[in-house]
Image (cartoon, rainbow, N blue to C red; front, side, top):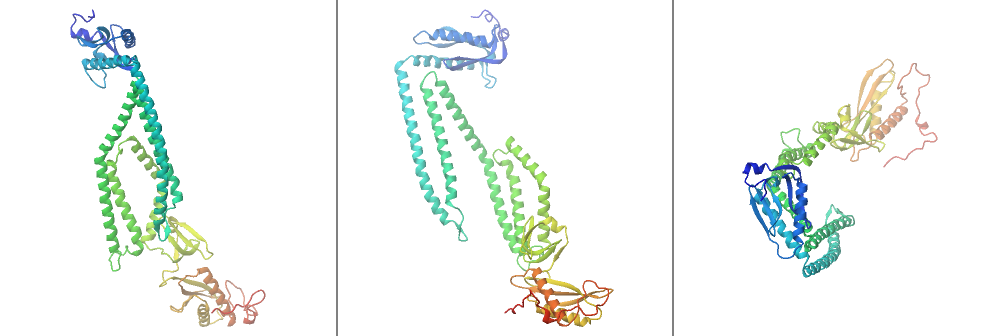
Amino acid sequence: MLPALAGADTHNAENAFSRSESGAPLKVANRTILTFRSALLGETPQVRAARAHAAINEVLQSSGDLSVTLQAIQASYIVLLDGRRAFIVTPGDIDPVLQDSARQAAEAAAANLRLVVSETRESRDVNFMLLATFYSVLATLLFAALVRLIYFLQTKVRHVLAAVMQQKAEELKLGGAQVIDSRQLYPLVTRILILVRWLIIVLLGYEWLSFVLSCFPYTRPWGENLNDYLLGVARYLFDSMIGAMPGLGIAVAIFFIARGVSGFAQRLLRRLAMPGSNLSWLNSETLQPTSRLTALGIWLFALAMAYPYLPGAGTEAFKGLSVLIGLMISLGASSVVGQAASGLILTYTHTLRLGEYVRIGEYEGTVIEMGMFTTRIRTGLGEVLTLPNSMITGSVTKNYSRAVQGSGYVVDTQVTIGYDTPWRQVEAMLIEAARRTPGIVANPAPQVFQMALSDYYPEYRLVAQVISPQPQPRVQLLTALHASIQDVFNEYGVQIMSPHYITDPRNAKVVPPEQWYPEPARREPPSA
């Protein structure tokens, strides 16, 4: 019995040791028996561990059955090995994480010491070591056979999947076109099979190493630690999946409800967009963007509702990702939102429609595509211009097709003729020129307006409509109309005084018909 603890009360016994910040593990034969965390009778945890290690090794040198017992002494316990003191477990050595009592800590240390005694006896047994070697060799051969089997199965599975992918790819068509090319899908499937193969091989190698280490007494603690780590990871993953199931179920239910609501909203919008509805803003043109916006709003609301129930939603990774997405949206969404808002304004105000001939600022052409962010027009030269929707809403748009019933547009041109030419003759010649121009319709009939009475001449404007199954570029039609106007005025000997003149010339500036085709001009045969 220790003199410092004999005959003392519990209070004095507890004052005989003091806790140290850093513990000293006691390892014998590669196995941790106990971690000393307090000083005892002036000895630091490191000194206590060294003394206990020397005492245990001294006793283990002897042969025979060695017993491990406990002896209580006040609040502490002495661990005896074959009747000799190995070490003392004090209340200060208790693991603060486990919060066990001194007796529980002493019993655990005694159990570990018994394992050390048993493993020491096994390491001195030749038959046991030969048997452990046999099991290790057998496990190695089995591991090698399993690796060969995995390679064989991977080859077979790859060939089977190649045939299945080829068949399914040929069957999966959209509009007569093959959607998936098996030659592009095959490398991806091959990489996935290689990844699965190596994952299985690594797990098998991990288990093989753990088994081989567990066969020998000295390395058995390492094998047990490997098994404990793998089981701990598997238990953590399993517990995480089981714990995430209720929240994941709620999230899936929210998404299913959102899907049903979205489908009901799509059907309702299609009914409201039918002819005869009282909603002027909802028709066949605005049905598609309205349906998309409605579906987007429903799914965003569902995502916001389901987000707290998603697995890992409360982790720092999810929080960091949310901050990153919010920062990206705040920095780059201003122009995107502005473009999208402009696209919605153009759609719901019916400023433009597909097929209409328009002039936007200095750009002129036929509308061929209207998107959420941009609008595309094709000019008379065959160029395709992509215009931001914000630019369209911020500039004056001239629509030459809105007054035309059907596929077509309005053409207009202006000429100035002197006061000495009767205005009735001018109107008749302009209408005749419009009648001769291919593409201009007779109903509604072309019209001539006198726009101004200037100092030297009146200003006449000719307005006509063009309707064609394949709309002719407006610039080409204007070219043909201007050519017809010049021909008609030359036929009747009327001089076009545009844009300005100061005095009447001696001879009228007209081109007689016999001089319409000087070199290198050629007379074109009349069109059928």
